[in-house]
Length: 129
Image 1 (tube, rainbow, N blue to C red):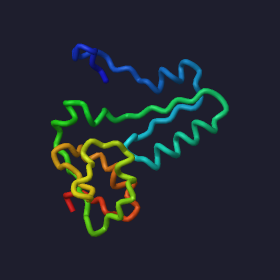
Image 2: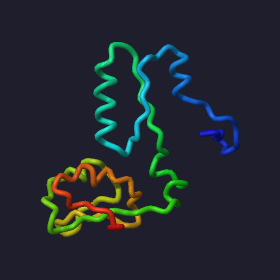
Image 3: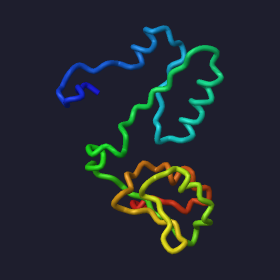
């Protein structure tokens, strides 16, 4: 990150180069918010004959510094939702059930889009649309 645990500025370490210097041949950077890309990368890493490393390059959405950034939350279109539960399986604290309906808490949604990606009927959409 270029910062120490105390938050002081320091040099940034290139994790990819560090891992390659240790002799790891399969090194791949992935966006952890892109579920399809992440799934594919895990499959490739598992299939590789030898050590493999996947590097995710986004900060945790639950960090205070990330929570303060501008975001575009998501919402559930009730009429489109079939209550399959796929979004609930993500474990997102913003997704809950209220009176039998799935809702996304605008204030807790980080805008990561993972719920939208797993919603097969397309009932979860960005509030920007």
